[in-house]
Image (cartoon, rainbow, N blue to C red; front, side):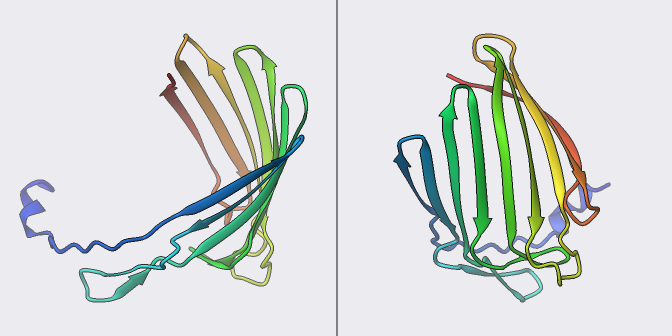
Amino acid sequence: DLLDGAGELPDASTSKFDADIGVMAAFGVVRAGLTVRNVTEPDFSTVSGDALQLKRQTRAGMSYVGVPRLIVAADVDLERVAGSLGDIRDVAAGAEAQLLKRVSLRSGFRFNTLGSEPGGHAPVYSLGGTVATFRSLLVDAQVTLGSRAGDRGWGVAARLVY
């Protein structure tokens, strides 16, 4: 029934130019980076005639890679971004360790620095891992726990690398 009604769906579309820019620098065992998404802040017309604008998002981060098979990292949103329950400006930190040659484990947390928003701080904690099953097939799994306003969930994925 849903496929029969597909011809009645609106078919208007628009295209806009945009860019995402990133830079990274290495200073010995420390890496620093900056990313800017939606640089031109493009806007689109929706089917209902409303305007939808993709706001610019800027994030800065650092990582430490001075211990063999261990990476520790943190990043912060530099601008407010509209979320489903109000504005967010997240701070996140985490670590990834290679436990065995073919097994890695990672964990981290994040929270909204704008605790006055409807979703509050919305802290979440995540745990995940990767197993290299064959030469070029990796299986990833993750679980995210914490605040109901903080995107809880789980996932399993397979990816091919070459």
